[in-house]
Image 1 (cartoon, rainbow, N blue to C red):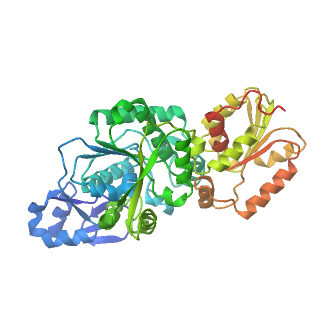
Image 2: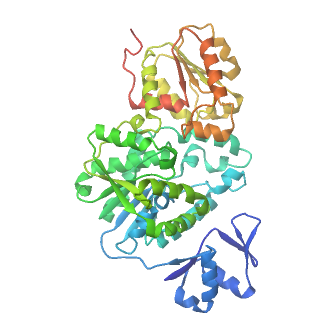
Length: 501
């Protein structure tokens, strides 16, 4: 057995702190600083025998982990995760139950990251190289603790696909964070999912897995949805290689808690296209505490004990007779990927939105867009709009705080105006108008509304009712973010005669 120190603890002289915290978590004796440093790379437990009491103390304080030997013979179980922590959160109990029974490979779909628990505190911890190295080290330790090896695709996390690392800092964080919400809530585009599918296949096929776990893609986060889509594309393309092995789609945590209704919608969407999924429930009561400890290894992202209530709640819901369990869904037929809008957490809302979109003539000469909130993936959104309405001139009304988002893409058919100028639209009866819901509430609530699909605040509802009354005689579409409209346009372009009676 190996003793290994958690990578998020840092020594300065005799003082040990958690990352950039000023609080001293541990003060070492001079004789123990060498041991503390050596445990960063790991040490055989037998070699640390003279420090047995101290090792036990540090283990209880979650400063070090005891790593069991892992199985090396046989075909592996391969578990794919959108980010480095998702398998532990979503299927950690199931994973621990399989520890030592066969080789296990965790395959993370994203590597480069600047995301940490300091985001919510506004602290200066944005260096992508530093955060990436830390997350990789945590993930390596968590994999070892679960009896697995770790592989990571060379892809950036969503925030770094949205804006490059050098643009993130304490001064830019709030405006970047604001615009990141609609980026994360945007539907994955097929081309991006296909590219990820090819990357996954290059890693997975040579492993010749005996079993494969993939995310079900619950929630609105683009990385979870894209990883799900890419996995299913890979399976469909290479079904001759995968048809004979167990394939499980695990329920993404914490999104399975945030969107309790979505699971049934997703299962029904797959069934509509002939894809059979059957529940696969395992009792994790014997390893639940170990799962919490496994999750707590990812301390740069969250505190394990803080995650425990929701993890327990979900385990209680999945279990029977008061037992704690994890639920996944076994793939029983060759996969077909339903339209993204049918798998989204706001699928019912998107169905209504599609009907409203079909009222806009594809040959419209002019379309107004009133952007009451951040735009997100503006270059992609703009190109989808231009392609969907090839004859239209777009008048975009946007707040000054969002002007920076437009710098990355301009076009002669898109005219940009200050948001306050939207009143010039009042006499222009007949102009189709898309309104991105105005967001006069705190940034945290905008995230909940755009990504977690929570209801609009009453104040915003009244504001939109007034806005609708001031824009009579036209097709009006209100959306959470422009990505909902553009996702539908990209998924299924409007028929050429849409909007014509």
